[in-house]
Image 1 (cartoon, rainbow, N blue to C red):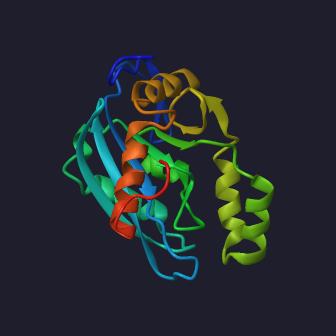
Image 2 (image 1 turned 30 degrees about the horizontal axis):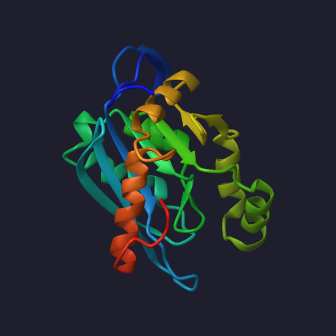
Image 3 (image 1 turned 180 degrees about the vertical axis):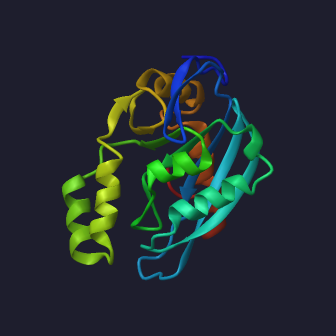
Length: 208
């Protein structure tokens, strides 16, 4: 496993151009949403943790609409308006959708933030069930399904499932392994999960 904050050379995409970037990825933001009741309508808390290597540097937050369309815009705003943004080098998301089916446009997030984006999940998603739910029950579901398709298939990298935007497989592996401190889930996502759950429910209840 790589040392704290150790990510090697990688390719990245900046404003649609393929650039070779040689640097260590050490400053990362990881986002997860808070739990909410099944009957809830309205906004849902999303927590972002900012790490410098393996050290928690700060916490940012935003709110996105349940089954809405504003997740991408809210994530970008929370990042670029944060005092941590000038040092950030990558974004991690626990899943491609927040607050139910508020699907993130990975390409837009990467372009607007100018940072590589990794979606990380413990297990492969049930795409057939997701497609059926989107097309049959969610307003704007066809557009949301196209965003999921555009993100590409999940890949098995470093023991987790990953979708990549702006980072090659080797760069993704090195980054994830450097942040796997207490299990397979990268620490920024584990911490975001714990904090979001603690705020919403009074304590963190589910395994991160």
